[in-house]
Image (cartoon, rainbow, N blue to C red; front, side):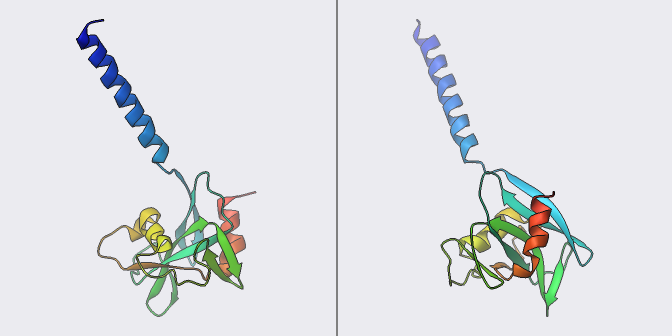
Length: 145
């Protein structure tokens, strides 16, 4: 085969490998919505990931969608993940008895990654685990029967 044909095959193969390598790293997500206090709140489940609890994503931003929980703190959505409940407080896997509210933690970063209203650069957001009171409601939202 001429060198030109071999190079074309090589680059086509490289392009396919690159595409499929990238495609495997993309995480798809299932988005459902639950109604709380008249607002439709997003409830995110990452496809293929098991979960047994939810974190709430909080902000001082009151723009909709928003569910006020006290003072100027508003829930902006929920993310399903693995972990455990101690009482009504959810502790994501790897964060047992560790504060998940700092922005540099993985749970808080998930709020920015998956909750649309937390994706604006000028909004302060953080994760919290006080979702035990919503658990059955959120579970029905993700898995309607």
